[in-house]
Image 1 (cartoon, helix red, strand yellow):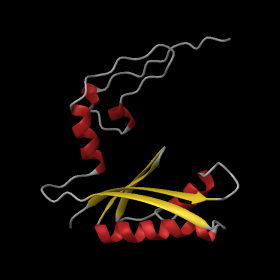
Image 2 (cartoon, helix red, strand yellow; image 1 turned 180 degrees about the vertical axis):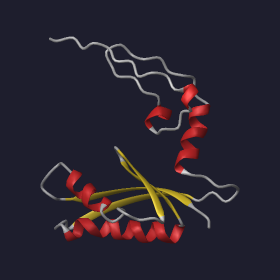
Image 3 (cartoon, helix red, strand yellow; image 1 turned 90 degrees about the vertical axis):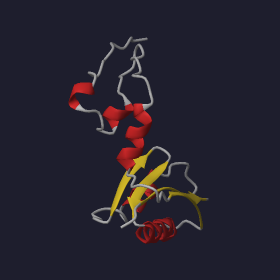
Length: 138
């Protein structure tokens, strides 16, 4: 079974509110409990991994959700990575990029995490500790 990786962003227009989180949360209900798709929510969209026909069907259902919540117009942006030379997963794509990056150093005053740690991809022996810096009060 060939898997694709897709990123979808669904934006209702003219809702009278700048916050879209309730629409995003409702769209995610379409994906909840599905065994045939893997997904990750990012700050700018949702990334899906599954068979092309399943992904396209789910994107259509997700795109319909804001209409059911009263939206009159919805802009759906979809990017699909259909790789046929070898299998790819959400995790393998992140690991491939992270292998090419030097280990970043923590910045003063911020909590530090590598992308690999955020996605749970670092091996035990490679994980660096999270460095917490004291915050200054102003």
